Length: 109
Image (cartoon, rainbow, N blue to C red; front, side, top):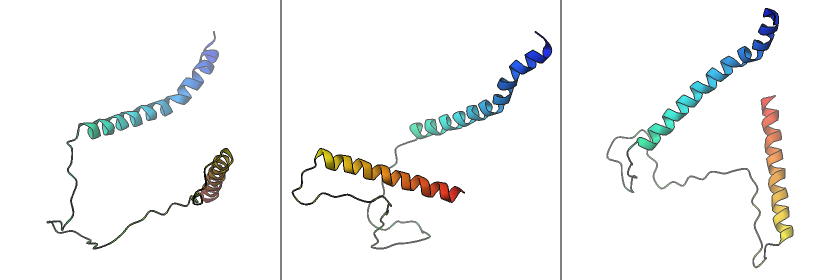
């Protein structure tokens, strides 16, 4: 083979080399993070009552709620879930996922 043909054969591996090195570095970092998490000591949870140390923000008698945008579908009292209602729920979930993806694409543009 000529040297030109050899360079043509090596073009793709050389093109992918930086991406492979980057993926190896990311995998190493991820491995060390998981390893540190699995090796760490078990922490005890904080119970009710005041924290002894000085804190930056103190919240008393508060409730925090995460409001997701996915619509909830609930059954009426005494209604039994049929195959049609299960299918309707799945279609509703798929519609919601499509709407979410569309909004993310619009935000990205």
